Image (cartoon, one colour):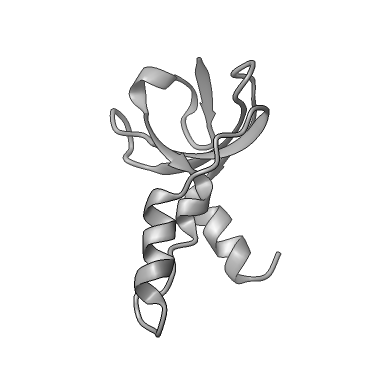
Length: 95
């Protein structure tokens, strides 16, 4: 599988480490009344969808960047690759 890195171009997926659902970028606040329950859900509860899915990948054998890859889990077709920092910045800006 080839991942088209936004900065480095096409790279083999062997250079990357899959880290799970991109919702991991939405880490809950560790403080508050129900913080333990929210954090346990964040760590352990995952969907296992068939079809388009946003995933978090780490470029371990390259520039050490974090990517959000939109991939069809049934066909492995990649439809989008974004820097995780850009995704996070856009969320904070409300886009």
